[in-house]
Length: 374
Image (cartoon, rainbow, N blue to C red):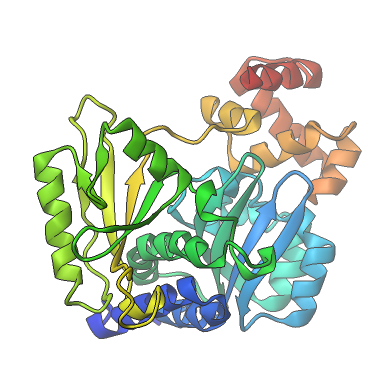
């Protein structure tokens, strides 16, 4: 099946479901279903994956097989060749499993023989939603009995920025709920500055990072209770966005990053995302916000030593997986059993890593990786 370019109304409907779920987590299963059907997949999951334990915390799912989901959590998460390499991809990146681990390599693993093949799974598309040093959150759509076409990739890419922001906006509304009800923690854990503002620019709420930005006064200020940008052009652009949103009832608008600083000053930008009026209070509540403004930090997230090492020496996903196992296990047999490949394949991957990194044995390899923690 080949997917044509999406109907704008269908795209808007899926995006609207994601923003609805941002406010009410009970709606995420419906949103996950709509994403899966929109891109043309068979199953979909939103989950945390810890690469080093390994542990999986499935948050929401659509059309998965309960039996295979159960044994994945109990046994096969530790054998999934996509990790930890998939967790090293940038937040917002749309990747197919076959992009990370080529099909020929995947077919040599226990994971493929015992978990993918019985379900007739052929490939998957995933988005990195958030990441920490050793774990990351993902949305994954899985395909059965057919390959992924380019139209599906394009559709997933269209949804990606809205999915990321709906997840971030969701933190505003779930900070007091249990972890199972939310994707991550509270608003104050968001690296970006986040501001909820009314149509006039009146500041309704700012997270801790946002409050510090206002106190510094370099990019943004609180002027009489209104959020104002220090750049005249940026201030006018933000106000124009807010005025437009006031009459759109929270409908999604095109992405537009508003520069807040000069090109040589870190390239700080603001992105204005809509919130419908009834989501932050009663219809006539005077403090109602119409938008969330995300001010992005120009500083990249700190990579783990393994990620930094892998990037420096251009390791493949399979090589990364073997190196990760080498850091916690002794002996080729133990590593082969842990990652679900042949002993000879482990040896081949390690020899390639030694060649790429200029090391001679496991001791030198571990010492070199440890150096990236400094």
